[in-house]
Length: 301
Image (cartoon, rainbow, N blue to C red; front, side):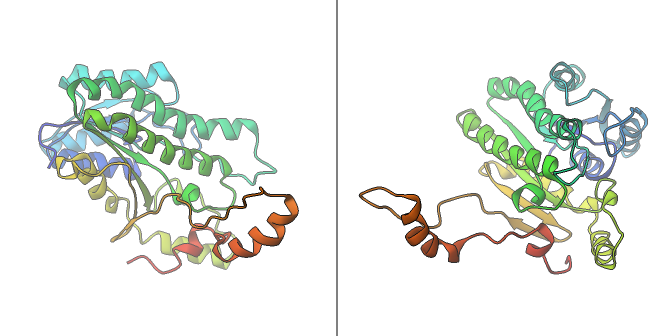
């Protein structure tokens, strides 16, 4: 489905990104395997993971090149796209997958922990997309696949930085879809459920936490790759501006914010009239303060 397309996959040295790169190559894409080789919290650098994925792709008869530029710096991110153009002559697909975690409850989170996560996830998605967008515009084709998370779409405890970045990516993806629609360029999001290094950092101090982690281990990173490959392919030519969640063998189309109830008053509103009239009318439709685990409460299928 991706024969002769050139795809950039960021954060492709391990986990979800690795499986996306492997499947895209198996489907015929020429792949730039980007990964700085950092730890889960973004520290260190190692060319090994990216090169290992490239070696796997080549051993299977595919085409790939390793790249270790960081997505969190604009000039460095631009070199990722340049690597694709210089090596394979074009760029057709961008998968914004690179990410780190610095989980902390909001009253303990440091500015450095906030900025580190925002820089990689949100700024990184923008920098890589910004570098690729002129190529897509000129050739009148292209696909962005952006990784969001239910941590942002729904919510999770101790992930204010990650949730803000991931919800920001959903907004960025939607805006890209609108900006690039006239140029036949698509942009969609995937909210993945999968056991990976990042998820492996979840605390397991209580029986409930241990039980949750055991369920998460059932969700393989390879299960995310088919949706990414589909969204990158011409078969998805009419799909743009959407958010899909993938959990083991389940695929969900996620809702996006729309008005669900409205009231008006010709004379305008006062704080008291809002309390007396608006609150009782709208309270039944309030969105519950739930975490992802409460919304996706059944075992993975």
